[in-house]
Image (cartoon, rainbow, N blue to C red):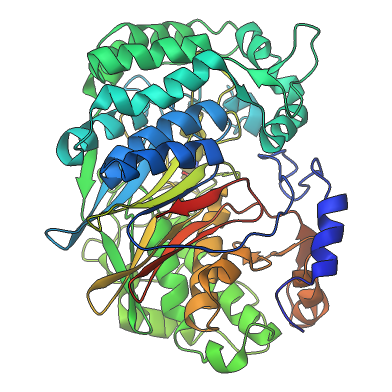
Length: 581
Ligand code: GLY
């Protein structure tokens, strides 16, 4: 059996892929899947950008072509994504960025994650009896809105690494917002799927629906003069307009005055917001170093654990068609997710074990796996921890949305950035032409269990744990690949399995990105509906897994440094492209 889809399957998927199929396992509608369009890899010599929407990619491409840096291009791409892919990321959200600086040959990371308002308490998402709220009761409205970080990330990194005029970088998105853009199939599908929640607030409804109350259809022209004004203000006044000026005041007014579910954000929260530069978290895998975002993201640690545990098995010899290979990857993921749930959170607030990536610890975790037989249960381990404390497993819910972009400039600087407003359309609250995030629901709704604290509990000023895994892979001390994906907590499996497909199974980057997905986090094996992944259902069940066939909605973008060439790949499940010269 070949994992690559047959032409027939692709043709039939294009015809019949159900754009609005319910994603039943979470019993909650996430960002909608939007079909599958076969894509070929793209090669270039000097620079490249890959992201989730062609208009955004073109904006970044023009910047790079004009001699702009990867960070300059990121500013242009993010400004455009916030307009044309508003359900996934934008000025009202947060992001993590892994940066490789060509001159110093050093990597670093930037944390533009949202923060909890200082007035927020651990009980924010509990009812008066201390019971967790229903997910969307928490999400929709002002309550879930954290202090946005994306604008400051754009501005601070531009000041540090950019060489193009800030206002010019915002201009393409500003012009497109004034003149309008064509609503894509993905955006139209997402609006259609979320009509009830998008109708809750009149300004959000007015933006995403026709005057007759119909959800905007694919092909509609959508103008956003408010967003254009916001970009014009940012162009003139910089990020101060957002964190200290009128844009911030508007956001605070909006969040606090939502009649049915107000939030707690203040001017002071915005004024205090900081981008945090953090050391890169790297884990070895075979002859590569897999580097990414440490806490408050669980991305690099969990990807690193999955790969570190899997490295004790000969996945290459087993091959991509082997159910046993997927059993091992699935059980390695479950063990890694058990540690994630127990230990990983914002380390500026909670202590975390030092030994989560220790080779001996991961070897001991690998010994728990029996080839051919699913683990009966996967519990958190006991990694090295100088100041151990007893903590409880978390109860966070994360749903697929978000966006990932990768950029390489002419000088060889690299950006791998995952950007989000959390759930598709975030809190559904708009201000100044953009949607506000619901990132606070990435905290555990419960703060304690059986008397023990949960690491990812909500605390004032804390950053909610993320799964975002913007990654740069190094080989022999040189950049080898930049990759990442949206997809809630499945991001981790999308990135890890793509790396295994490329490194162990020799798949070219586009094939690894297109690979039918098999994802395990908490025990149930999710197999991507309508793909050859379904063929693993019976063997995985026979090994003891509960299996669920469902839409899986990755959005991987990657650039591979392939012997002097840049080879870019875009996920066939989204609308993105790679473009370079
Ligand atoms: N809100 C998605 C994530 O941060 O993982």
